[in-house]
Image 1 (cartoon, rainbow, N blue to C red):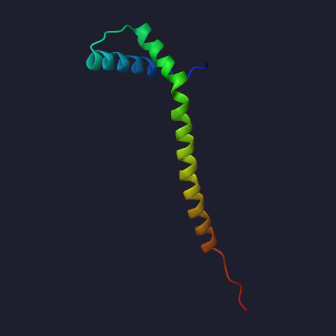
Image 2 (cartoon, rainbow, N blue to C red):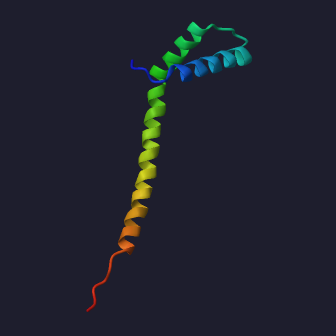
Image 3 (cartoon, one colour):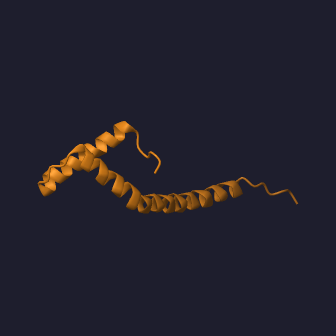
Length: 81
């Protein structure tokens, strides 16, 4: 799998996973375990979030393009008779 996150972001996410597991489940995990969990979710659940984001932007852009087409139509000039 290609590198999705920079090392800095990955370290932040690992820290968030560790804090969540400790706070919510009273489970202390090390960096290796938290990074392994992050990689698992990135590979197995990440594509669902990615695909939903693609769908959302397609919907947004379709509305934007419809509005843009209407605005362009407003620019059309009617020739004199």
